[in-house]
Image 1 (tube, rainbow, N blue to C red):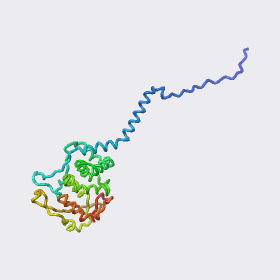
Image 2: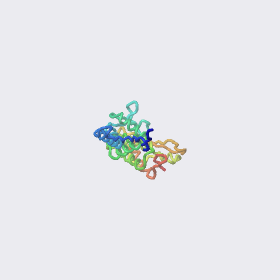
Image 3: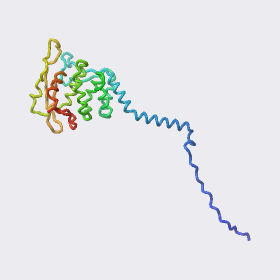
Length: 253
């Protein structure tokens, strides 16, 4: 009879897989290229806002913006009491200007940066488009932004279209608090009379108010016939007014 071996039976060896290194999957140059692409992508994304602001500002600066100056018949001059007064048209870069107006709702932070850049440092076209956009940006504006708009009322000698659009923009964002003071608000402020012999197209100076309700409270809106009258009225009547962050309007007591 054969002898039974007495040594212990060794268990089978366990297979431990070797970790696969990234360099074993793809060559090192490929990984370097991928890393560079990722970094470039991050940089592009990080600078997107700055590039969008820059290209938008350039577009509205070069759009050759202007306002409508005559009634539909093409004869009578528009004054500030007309609903068409201060309407704007861009002769160049129309699609880019439209994109800027879209940004006012979709990316107001970028649009507001463009708005402020234009009113502080822009040419006539940039200021015209920025002023026209103020009603769309109203909930994001503050008292300093409104002061920039008021300053544009004084630009008639430099750029008549800027002062006309500023007049419309200021009017759209102004509320008069005393609905019982129509006569007081509509009184012409002290200023030189219109010289019809010198400027036959100058409109007759008029001020009109109309009732408006915001947040359940009654107010008056105001329209002036021309920028000079608007500026004179403002200096005479609105120095005690304040920008209301809830109404997004300048409220005159």
